[in-house]
Image (cartoon, rainbow over all chains, first blue to last red; front, top):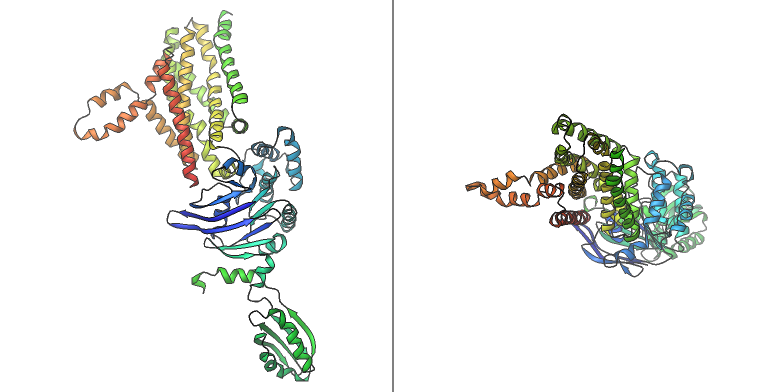
Length: 316
Length: 279
């Protein structure tokens, strides 16, 4: 549905986006991650046709966003980062306006508005003027605007920003549900959101894509992925460190707590041997007649990966 | 009673016909997007106090000052009515930018420009829809000044054809000022800056056509000649001579073409300004 090829954006001498390419198919929810100023919003603005790219091409359902502007734009629903609204309109009035602009047939506008209001929980403020709304309601009103014409492609720039935890949860579920039939791109700072609602994620830093994969694949790349924590007891406890270090699947062993008849250790896997580590560790314990009280394999943490790969040179 | 019938025949009916033609064009010729933007924009003029305040200011200034300056009341001569229109553009130099200043700057300040430009519409749809809404506000403003016409017809027996021509000429000048304001409001997100710059430009546009300027141009000497191209340009696009011709009741094709091409040029410049904003 969405094909982005070699997208560049220069603002004067500043390079905001530097060769970003990706595709999003129908049924995919792509999470867009990156530090502030990484080029997420700029990329999304180019995908929606608001900013013309300096170089590169965006096609939406086969229609080029620059050459076939109107056709491409009619397939997109877009929630900009700031969730802008016309302050002199009511929620319903604004959604009616959006429906007309998004080419919803005249006879179906009322139904479309009602559905969008229901989906985004706006019923209590339906007749309220936009400039009296709280931030959460403003955000949801703009979100409602983006789905009013049931678009094939949804582009959401920080859709859960400014919402309370319950609303965040609802919006995540909504994105997940809509993702089954649409192609969705959404950007976020909240990493749990990626695990909760994305089928794929891209990490972008200084205008470049630096990681691309399913949340599970990305998590496996984090430095803590596959680390085994062992808590074992038995007489031979203190000598086990040396035994563990001999294993080919082990890169290093860090003893956290050493007692008279027991040990707690954190074992880092050698490169590419992550899956074999826990059984090997278990084997050693068995040989030494140790009782394994706890054996835990850590899942990679997305926030750790994020920090590791988006560190600026100054941080290193 | 006669005056009343005259007013209906010579003013109300033509006004209604023009309005009907406008509505017909809007509903049958222009795309739905233009109509939707037009409706939203017009509604927002009247849901905020801006339109009402401007109506009161304009009608207050134009009726009191005009009567005062032109001395219509003292003379009691309906022939003196022409001066009333000669003053109207002076007020419009201020009023038209006040009507148009929000057109694009408000859109930028709220960030809704990003929404609008990602909707499936061509930029000219939005530019035209907004411009037409502001034009209707100015049109309503002129229509609301009918008590002055009524008074003139009550006091004497003026040439209503000339009065009508005066209104037409004034409206064209107002449309030009509005078009200039449209460009400026696309450049800045501050309504105040849009207002001030537009007033300055409209003033220049109005004064540029002063006969004195043409004389000045012929007498430029020495170092002052460097200003010649600028002054000449201002002089050429000055709206005053075209206004004067139209207001005399001479519906010259040349003047109408001037006004229409000036407005078209400004609306095109608006689209360029918006495109540059995005790049």
